[in-house]
Image 1: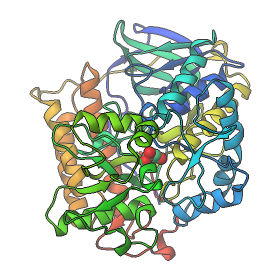
Image 2: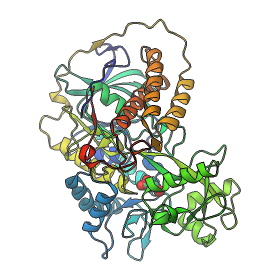
Image 3: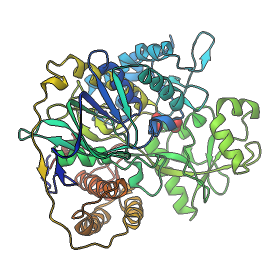
Image 4: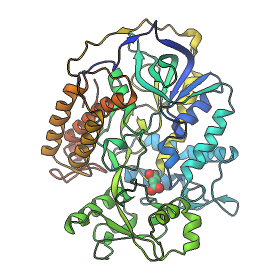
Length: 536
Ligand code: SIN
């Protein structure tokens, strides 16, 4: 299923001769687990520039709590992890990709240990715990609930030690550059110190992460504004499964607090959900109760909130030993303490929020996109691993495995060096807009509220149509402008990606995994056991 949509090719004027220029064998955009791992692998044979729009630590990876799923215990098997992933993915996982990712997990985690990643241990082996949908405790964690930070710091150390890798922070990638054959040639970006800059690259790896900031409620950091999706779409890449946005059931809901993730591993270790009458309700919705798949738990919470006209439900952790809780969940312990929540006495107010983009830029088993010289890995990529629903903690695993695969593919490809770059002159000019007044912040906030309301945990046709109409209206006066700062480009990217997500959600006239249609509550295998693709 493919749709043609038209829009401006580049967001800014480009004069590739007068812009400052850098040359590299491989450009990696993004410094989460996938980008860092890809840079390390590529740098075995090629030189690499890795860029990020903020600081190297500003990633979803850094905030990941629960862990990384893998078969690390003798009582567990690859077959079981594969079966759990396929079951959660509701019929549309790519089975080869699932097999490949699951089987590479233990070796790559072993490698991380060798790179001084301090996973929590149980005796001499890596400790593992349970999350929803896993039939075996296989979620490895580090420093309790700081798994992402510990893994990212190990990879950053490794990247910094590598003389083949140059890191550029505060570099905002505006657009992928393509030649007349639509081969990717690198990127036009904005360097905070130097202004506009072209990076010509023989190969480019997109690892820009997620889209959570398209929603009013999200676990994602400020940078998750869907830049990679919008950029790749403008360049003509095929997008896949954008309707599958995963909502995490439990984020802290306190007015004034950021919507911090309250890790699912808490429920894996016995925390229960209570409604505002203090009743445990998950058994009413699923036999696995608190450990049901995330989409089921999110919708159950939403249902309870509606029934009781409440803004949240509660997570009960009062039965945990306080000393154990502080050691096992140090980050959450400190966070709750800072809001005077005494875990021995108080309930934790929680509600769902946008967490993870399952779809993205379509890639093959070698992380190649539909555009020559352009690869993608991590959350931005749609590899087919997750199908219609992602099994908890399979995302760090996917980033690690496909980061390596992308790096291998680039470093093995012949002529993938800056010396072979035959880049064209690119001159692109946009007619000046006569609509000058715009409060981009207001557009962003309104968009996030609209996405939450109309394209959220449950969907139906009329609100999806309304959302598209409103987004197109906003696009009329936002997309014709030429901004000169990341805030404006982000706003344009957010509008583009939101429209694509909304269109995909309207096309999938069934419910499957994280995509729930109130007007089509059943799964329709006859018509929709397939992917939905969008391209420019
Ligand atoms: C969590 O810790 O609950 C999140 C882990 C994930 O999203 O896989």
